[in-house]
Length: 307
Image (cartoon, rainbow, N blue to C red; front, side):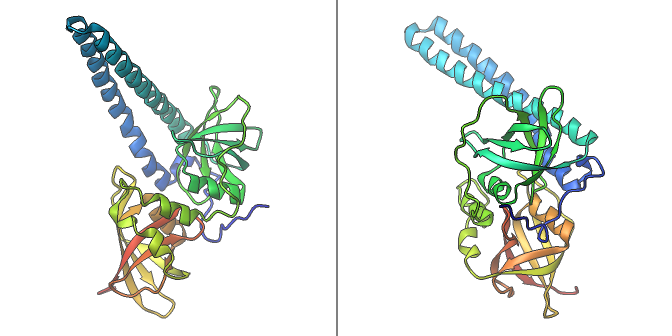
């Protein structure tokens, strides 16, 4: 049994190219920039490998140097080839997104996210299983719960893109032709918001969001009207965002979000709303976002002057 909560988030438009969604377009920018980055990395690693082999030829201990050079070359080659493969996939996906509209499809998660960020999702509408790159376990938990998604493609080479409910991300995907043994599938009753909060405790995440697990337990979700000040996305997919909140009791407050995911702000723009956990009072830090989805960030509540 599936459960959709589309009264909380908005489904994508299906009558225009997928890339016409400005939030999806913003989220693709880091992928485009990574094309140049990984080409440069490939050149640097290639030169490094060449220097390793030169060092082996001049070394007093050629056996040891040969072993070191072989390991380094193999690892470097594997990393670069994998990333360049993904970069080419992103390029093809961008072309699909600019030419095709999202098609609603039923989905079933066959294999959860691996260590390398790859999952396998069975897609309806005659598409079949897709290998999906980059979708987190929290995003897959939504797919398990709702059983709905949107797809563009696949093209003649099996390349496609998948959008899951509650996210503007266009996840790169490829047709998967091998048998799949189900594994690591999130439970149907998983709380995607709580999963995202746990994931945000990672050391490399924005410090402001590492308390999300604690903040998420501070009260009940409350929906308020919200509008956004202009913002500029950073290359890590976050931004400093400020939302004007209009509370049911007539008060107007500001929510300052130091590391708001672009996906969260895109959903505020789509719906004209934001959900808060706990009572909004000036000076308090709350978890804000959209319940049941990996759309969550920390916000400090401030007085609104002149609003």
